[in-house]
Length: 190
Image (cartoon, rainbow, N blue to C red; front, side):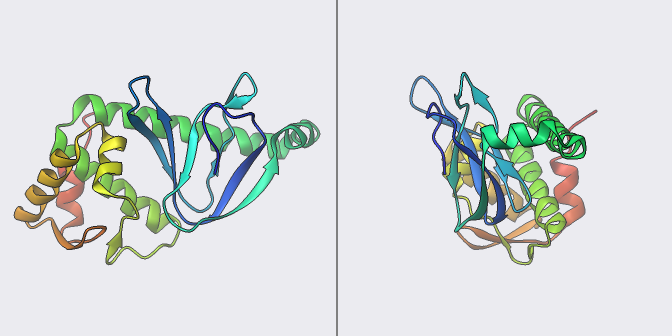
């Protein structure tokens, strides 16, 4: 949808589909910093007039595009919209902080459990079916999001299956067998 470092043009409000927001590290690896779903905005953050991150559609995506410069001028004259935008960006910042806690405190299987719980909560909030839970993201992409290797992600899925917390259907679909246990495994200490 947009590439990190390209000149800022439009930002997007997702109406359908899933988008991964990422950054490419100096060594060429990708770090997914957020997964966004219908109702979320992507491509709003900039550095010196350029996109600060990359936005990649993981599924078929429909989105409304807004010219960033025109939107900023419009927002200056509509305080209610400015407040809504601030709330949206504040929510995204809180989620980023939560993700940092997950990365810093949890072991690999706990990270995967937390990720699955977060996806279920996001889908339920956006009224996306969760049974079966279609992830729309590969194990490699989950690894890029959680700071894990694909092998570690696969082993973690296997451990959750062995504990009868999830059932694997296909490579990108699972059934959550025990929501409560999944949440307990992936819980971040406060």
